[in-house]
Image 1 (cartoon, one colour):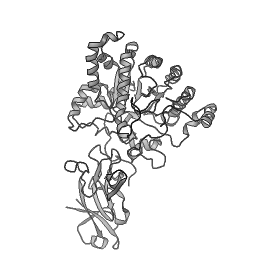
Image 2 (cartoon, each protein chain N blue to C red):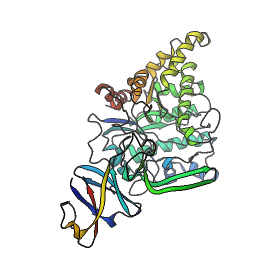
Image 3 (cartoon, chains in turn orange, red):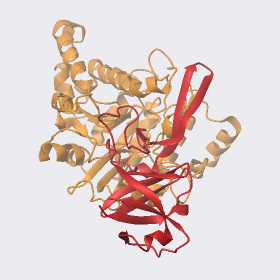
Image 4 (cartoon, chains in turn red, yellow):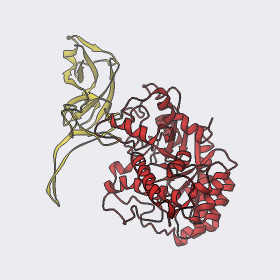
Length: 364
Length: 137
């Protein structure tokens, strides 16, 4: 059986693709330790890495094929997406990925010990450089920050911002408080200053349960609950005034779906018309903030029972704010040639697959 | 209709699969409990290679705690999103009327018989005593 898919198919898009959601993995447990100072290695050895999320480091639910594309296990061994050469062979080369943005799912976002969290984030960022960014010029990194400690997060952003291989700041939506709250604003201020978008990966670990009502019983519930977290935090950021304070901030909602986006904004608009007296600190309408500041990645692409309905959804959301993503190597991977089963103009297709991301991340 | 010798029958074990290219077509051949079946090696959903999928049966249940497997080895589950296809017919398990992958005729023929017929043998030195998987296109 051949080890590699698609080598005999033409590359997905002549113009190149920007994949905004690739999950790099450790080859073996403990790989991060090499990037931790002795003080924190000893701490982890003696005290562990307690977090409020009981499931950190494990899958809370049995997932389809352990959550991975079944064909993504590297032939040389190790977990999916832990081997750069196989990632190149299976993803970057055949799909013509011009730039691939790494989304490490770090535990450093939400450890109870904030200083440990900061050390884990710093180690994760060093690991990205060492294992990935320095080895393939197509790859770009995410600055992982200990978001519950805004000052430490800003220090980490300042440390990484001069390295243009890092193109965004990664926060988890399962935060201690809704992400519009002021405790997080120093992160947004630094993000705006350095022109680095905030990437909110909905399926990340974090301090909270996977829904506002607590832990779900089943993976099928969790899988679409990712969009709830994105919605809650988007509303929080709009109404707390984050985009009023930081009008040039960009926020990317990653892996939370996008079909819900249009009706949510419609409803916000209507309620803003009636209730804006409650939020006089907002000088503009929700639509205005969203138009300037908010982007969404496409995977897992919406699949209405009637394919052509996707055209309406894309128009409502706006193809100018959609960024293609595969979620490689996870099972719910999307392929750039097949994910959009509706006619798109060449300009729209190119915008979603490449140009929007190139402009947003200033890649070219 | 051309007949193509694609491999020796012992090259695909029971429960195994193999990807072959016949006349430019990407085809997945499966050994279902000693008999062979072939379907297009491309999931109609997003194009994954079906020969990389898990081969399994249908798990049935009447009540909690009671379950059994029917038709073991007769279905393949796409390695990406888990779409399920009947290996023998190419029909989707969920939506057999509308969703399917192309199915091809395959048979097993003795090497000695292959020396006589109108077969296209592209890759193999055929030995008289072995059995070969032959795909009709």
